[in-house]
Image 1 (spheres, rainbow, N blue to C red):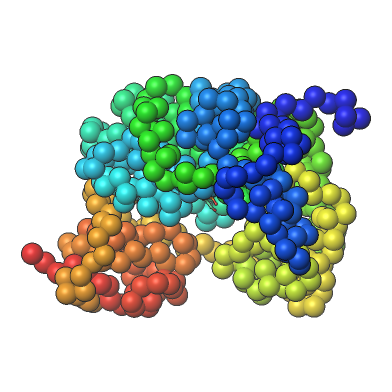
Image 2: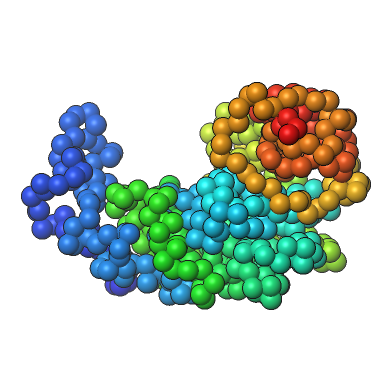
Length: 496
Ligand SMILES: Cc1ncc(COP(=O)(O)O)c(C=O)c1O
């Protein structure tokens, strides 16, 4: 059956053909198609090295693609409906940095939601851009954050007409995806580019059960981790561009700055294969994973009733998002086990989740989870429920601490310069939190929960921010990585 399918993965095929020519290698890499590996290291790893070559006439060059890599990237652009697609060998991390470097010169302004991956902040630092941070909206039921409101983005654009780009991140780690169409329309009205970190949504748009992709919704540039939800090797990702709001020469230069001049061929071939699988199998590719995910919830309802999971939002919700059906966000409805404890219990019984927060675990089914996998997983949850006597305990009524809405908290920050300079300790002092208003923070403050940065290094501390931090501290939130985790004091830059 498989042999009849014409799989068109030009980069992968070129590497296989090159290997079969029995080439004599007088170039890097030094392992020479794996032949240089000595026992006992010549087992698992050896086959991959057969494809691990360098830039040759047969294998093209990622940074100046004119042959098989160009062909593979063009097929990816066609598949993802982009004008151009760039293969990334440094994950979405490298794509986020490159997108920002391509749009922002030093001093340029960018609007960005607070809850972004650190690569976005690093991109802003390296570009020397000024960031206007927007507080994301919180889903009423779960308390999880998605993206800033359209109104806040518009207000920020009105306040700062010189803004070059709006940066959004969707879906979030929990699989909650927001349609960015109205944000794209808004950004374009203000002559800005919309850049989207869609690291967790490489599969979006390829099945009716999935949310639409950000590129389809009108974003100008979108980064996706092909390794997260499709089948590429770890670090394999793509950057898709549509329209001409991003300069291609600037983007190519930025990508060459942040990526290796010797990108891994097995890695690039795995991106090519991931795309070829989508092209070859279409919607069907996802049916198995989707059925398994659905089955998981049914089995959980029967066997492990103490656990709850994130479901689609109520139809009348004021904050529309769609859930990625290929992941499950599960928590102990009795409030006995934290997310971290649950994660450890799962690991102890052989099930390894994607991540945990103080309350929940996030589980990924991917395209290949089977009924057997999810039944085994549900059985482990049932066992955990039994061991901790959860089934006989009452479910708790969840009260959520809404931290941002209770105060005159400015949801739109003043422009912040995220400095790359390692600060001189002599320029910093510690002040009690209640005396920190109108000072510049010398610390990044991310209280858990809710895990959203309330204050960036370099940001001006307002009365609203102090009120939010005080409230969080009173409710037991803890900040890791700052000098005073209890939040009674803050490190700020000295005046003058
Ligand atoms: C929202 C988001 N963006 C970007 C990244 C970085 O992706 P990568 O691991 O592909 O570099 C992550 C990593 O988890 C992420 O969660």
